[in-house]
Image (cartoon, rainbow, N blue to C red):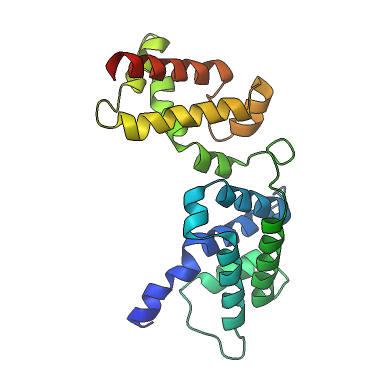
Length: 222
């Protein structure tokens, strides 16, 4: 593989194409979610992020899938990174690889034109929760490490852990994630459904307590 192909290979084995194929493979496993639901979650994730929509909108993802579909001519196969063909075959099953990429493109365009599903009609998947609430997940140490005898002391230590320079960048974003999670999942049952698999320790009282500790820190130290 030439150096140029090695660089452009990232189109095949990284970013949105790889994520979509990985999701499709998960859907084919016994008990896996439907492909339509996972694509709806993928599209919801992009549409909920102004940064992602700015960098690679769904129309661009669909166009990239169509472009790859057109380039993967079985009669004249292009050079692709090692493992890509196998991954595509695993994701597509009995459907021809290029045809499957075109199918994904069409489904994404359809989702892009529809009203985004809410989290009650389409619950948040664990991978989606990990992407949406990364700082809550990273707070796990302060909740269940056992380093602090007093639970509230651990929360206060966690709230102050980025002080002073990281408070405006990291701690403020943690507070925003906590508030979003509590608004999206206001009841214990809703929170378990939305975050239980990705953040097992999360509960409404614990998230509220972390948020209070952050507000106290901001009030007293900033």
